[in-house]
Amino acid sequence: MGALRASTRILAFVKIAILARLLSPAQFGVFGIASLALVFIEMLTETGVNVFLIQEDKKIKEYVSTTWIVSILRGVIISAVLLAGAQLISSFFGSPESKRLLILISFVPFLRGFINPAEVKFQKNLEFNKEFFFRLSIFSLDAAVTIILTLITRSAESLVWGLTAGVILEVFLSFAFIKPRPGLLFDIGKVKRVIGRGKWVTLAGIFNYLFHNTDSIVLGKLMNAYSLGLYQMAYKIALVPVTEIADIFGRVSFPVLVRIANDRVRLKRAFVKVILGVSALSISYGLILWLFAKEITIVLLGPGWLAIVPILKILAVFAVVRAISGSSSALFLAIKKQEYVSAITFVSILGLGITIIPLVSRFGLVGAGISALIGSVLAIPIIIYYLSKTLSKCHAGN
Image: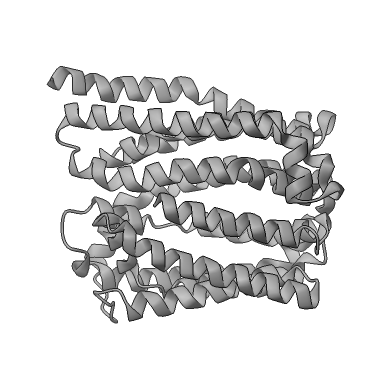
């Protein structure tokens, strides 16, 4: 998993470094509007299928066909909503240029719906060596198509076409190399069980989306696509490497913690190792970004992006806090306490929601970063409470 994340992040930074010199911040902002809309509707319709399949003791084969049909129907709904709302969304952000990208990106969730749900077995069975080649090939095609088309067209639409190419390849690979393959079988009882277990994952996903994107939505509405492009680029540089570190630990530890969930003493020891590892790596990166924000910006993006330096410093602190505090999610999901994750994320979005407009109005882009940091810090007492509640049971069991 470490090799996979390192490889994809290197490719991502190469892609960003090239695209930042071919596209303007405003073009990145237009793509950002389309991405915000897509991810928002995906979160609203999240079924929690992957979490359910990993948590479930039974074999994936019993649920793969039903969850595939659910995924297809979900993809159709998301695509239809995006197509129908393209004009409204572009008008909301005052960005007529984003309408065409919204129409183009609406085909992505439709295609994603056909991905074989059994690909989750890589994570469930700890087969991360297979996932390495699977994910790296998809991401490589995405990056290659995006860069080549951008060199030719100098258009933000290239970002959507790269994303589309990656999804098409994932659909093909998921059926060509992963078993069991789904069929046209539908069991309403299994659907109810998946949805019933996944409702807290859905709620947590919605809150998580709002926490990570409310600042971008407010910036896009109160300011312009240029400002949104600057902020989202700073957000990627600050958050992506740290969240990748946290995601590596989360993806690896979650299925492991599920397996040892009934051994609370072992569970506690494993979680302590996870949070220490995440803390050491994320703090190291955060310090480097804080100290060398200007140099990193010039090397990665060029001098035309120096306006993001003050935002980078704020977001570097936010990224570290978020990565460390977010390590608790794998533990809570492993013991099937999805509601804990929902409550924590709700507190974060509440802090962000209360402060975002006044801070952006007063401090602009920097205010958005400060608001995100405030939301993350406010959730820490809630995380500590739930951890204390969970780990005290481990101590009692010992």
